[in-house]
Length: 275
Image 1 (tube, one colour):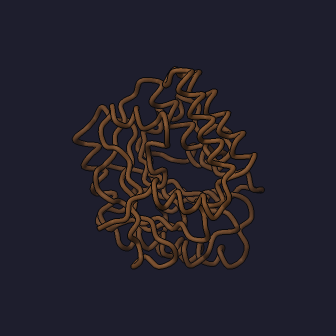
Image 2 (tube, rainbow, N blue to C red):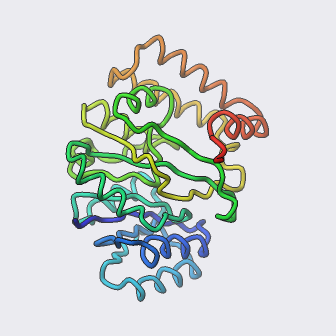
């Protein structure tokens, strides 16, 4: 089955991370993508451009580069990339992560076995700088009912491993502006529209989360984003107003904690250390 891989790249990415990303989705995959749509979200600089050209020579025609004249943000960049995807099934990927060798093979098998599902992701193992240190599991529920329940409190999919039907995403309006949470916003709209979703039980990808990423998810801008999330849940009737408001208050207070404490809470309660 043909499928597209959709990636967005902007100027702050590390060229070596990009190199490892392409290595994992092309050279090291048991099944290669039919096409790779690489959106350049604004000018990317000379060094990144050299690595893009390197992989253009390696991959050839399947790598389609979509340059944008200015940085527009991840959601808008992905919407532009969607227009250029020629296949119904689209697999997302971030430029600093590393796929396991049979990621696509496993997801394609699940697509064939579960034709009613329009969107699903998989489990992710997180690491700081060296993949050999990956030992933190970012787990998401597998079954449909568990995902719906989980979605009321937290994002139910690991966005960097998501695969979805292009026609469904376009029908729902694609990615919409929602600061820091474009993906969560879209997933809630898919679930709210009544489509079947799922998650693969296996780890599909190693995700790079160095430089205190979790600890930076704080402040007033994040609280504004939480309010937008609250309004969306009420609109879609995915959660009772009382429970949604209580969760909004709890999540907002969480965003006000000191960065050092916030990082510890993420690692202690929201992630599982792999055995």
